[in-house]
Image (cartoon, rainbow, N blue to C red; front, side, top):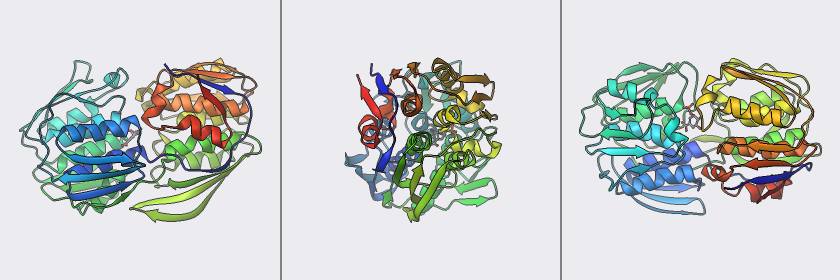
Length: 433
Ligand code: S3P
């Protein structure tokens, strides 16, 4: 059990490069493994989630060297070169691994069993297994529609035209990956834009993907050709520091080489709406993804009604944004974010409990929350094993009047190894006891 103790006050300064993007790291391993040729990856996230994906492909016979300082070499086996693993594939805490692998493995000749930790075993999987079943996949879940998932190989898949009921990049990606193995054309329509790393990377691997409006399509039975991948720093990890620098007087921080894909920048848009001082420096392209250095300086924030169209673009950043709201003047209102209730934890409830423990008014609603900005006190926070909750309350200490103790922080390693070291360097008074 790892707990954080964060002393109050301080400010964030200097230059910081947070670890590689989690979503892109997963996809680099998956697509590199089923490509033809050798894929060299730089900037890979050496966190437990992406390492779970890496271990799964090694277990299916793919030779993968590294990671060594973010470098990974994947010897692709081609679309049909994966082998039956010797046992269950344990995906730990990683929803992305499990949902994307469902699609990719539904079209293999062999059976697989996907398992995860307690949190992952509670999360809804029907959102992928149902549309995959329509394509011809056979995947058995528990009665509650959760893992363990038994995927029966040797099925013939056929492309579908699917309109997603929820805006989910994991569902979209899962179906597109199954579509690689399907007869005919697979199309997915999104109710709102979601992260498009799968489409971009497929294109980078020479696989034709078309987009018309909100509909993304590909044909089965093509080939992926190995390509170099430069993984940018994860905007979701940068978000804690963007909020920290915005709320702590005297802060002036530059976050280097951060991915600013338009489907991921909700946190920047929302913070700016709240009055944050955020500047994008030297915007550029790296490996098919837009990247920039992000300068954040302290600014007085005010509460806002969060625009509905920003919700999917900031879906992982709400725990951090709630801390910004707690430090802002006035009320912040979030709606249309019921998805937050089925993340690594119920992020609406767990954040509301934590904010209240620090003396902030927070009222959860079925699909969002109302937060009244105020004075943060010290206190004890239960992170419920959710990495993003733990890191959010850590940066809250910058504006708290007392020490914040955060329980159950081991899962920070799923997305942000070295958080404590990096956060200390930037100015947070944090230790793990
Ligand atoms: C992800 C998609 C999002 C996000 C998750 C990573 C991905 O999930 O919350 O952390 O890499 O595709 P949903 O697809 O459930 O919105």
